Image 1: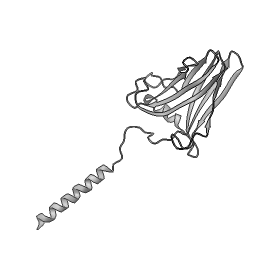
Image 2: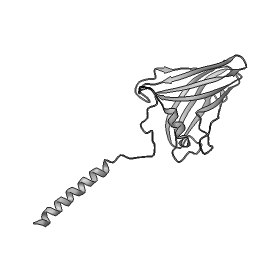
Image 3: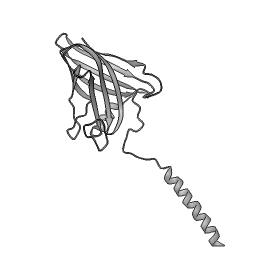
Image 4: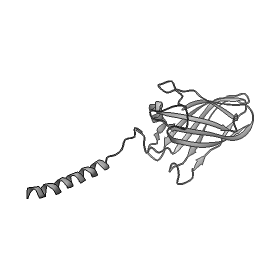
Length: 186
């Protein structure tokens, strides 16, 4: 009789252990998994050959994050030709009060993050990353934007999360930000 009760008890115990193991939260090494980036601010500062010292901020704001509703604020970047600007990126989660500065987390995990900038048409704006991670590789929270001729187009701002595999290409990792800002150079 003991033998009959032992077998169902062991089967039940085995099934329970499978349920417990399958409910364990997975950790993929991405500390900010599930972080919401609602706002991207580009702070420009510099002196163009055609104008005085200037500082301005261009904002992209999408309160519900990627997908869902359209952005509520998507400003155009206005630059002067033959000019150089220092640019700093601020990433925010404004769904929280107070807003959480996600760019601080990107800086803390700099070895796993990389910004990419590309101009379309090529040469409308030339972007050079000016900050590095702890391994001496580009990060991109800070950059220099240089213009030559007047024109209009777009500049893509893309942030890749590349834990343990940062290789300098945008083909590796997960995309955290991917925005095409309209740019007018006069």
